[in-house]
Length: 77
Length: 424
Image 1 (tube, each protein chain N blue to C red):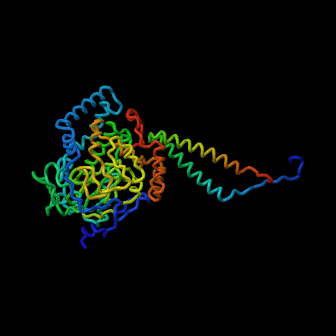
Image 2: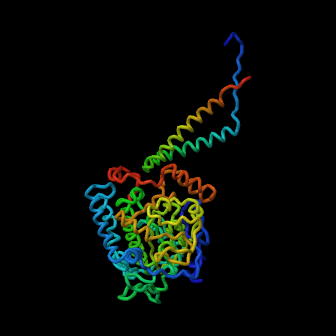
Image 3: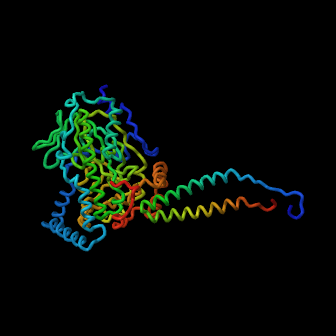
């Protein structure tokens, strides 16, 4: 046990319902932009493909950031 | 009520057809308003009108001088290998036009009488009979096989049939069979149904407009149209009925296509379909085969066109209307008066064709509804535009931001490996 303690506490925090709603929306948009990026490249619409890839990258980075920030312990926990 | 009359009056349910949920059937099209001025169109085509007007405006010999200059300019482009106008580009277009150019109204593939099909009597059976809904489905299935991207049934409207063609009158008579005589084209009055067909154009070629490659998309669309209506007319004759195949000849295609629910009239003063935008060629078959008629559709296009104006801005000859609202104000003898539309200046349009040496097509390629169906987002945008016109302006901005409607590299077409693209 750390610091010689007999017990330790694991906190399992339930994510709020709105978080899962937003997560669902995020997945939907991620898939939509990814499909647009791939399809636009096939259609020779390179600008549309580039913008869609940027959107995918930004959303992925944003999604990962929010996911881990939400999972971090808050002050007092 | 006789089957034929019941089908015409809408007693029969419009035949089933799978379309997106946001394409709604309506009783009247958004731009269906007509006045007493609406009459049968003269049948004069823009090419003849342009020649007359050019001579009147710029003097005798100006048209011939323009044609000579065009030929010289095109030969120069071919010699210097200008992308999109090289000899192979030009001849690709010529090849695409072959089937269409081999025909004339009432002759060849567009014959008003049977070409080779054997009649039911010759096969020792009676003519095919079925309820109007089933007949419509049968004919539509055949039309799709022959190349129709979209097909619908409309009632015959004599007002949409040209007055003349090839220096002969087009008349309706109590005849048993269609006929082309030395003085007139005879349409039997019993031909009360029109199968309206939209043939999708090759978007890969159209995206190269206004080059010879872009023109090949038009030629191919017309040639496919000739094949489709000829085949469908033979099919109908083979069932024991009369059929008249028609591409741009004989009658106006757009109003029949609107009434058959294929699409809506747009700022281009052409048909725009929900699925292919304006990138279609229209053709039709007149028949006495009783079928259930379809209804016009509304997918929010007229409201979208009011805000968009992308085609008018893209048009290099400024031939398209910038008016916010459609009106009854025509812009020349090429327009048929008496109906509400965004009328175009076909003289300016055709003048630009002389500059580039072939048809243009920029307006078709630039329309936000002209999209390959591969990216799901296009369907989502069209659906939203249909139910929430407030978003139309935003979609127009995004269409530009994403770079849609810009000309694709003509040279790349020849080396492009695109197995997922249906050629034509």
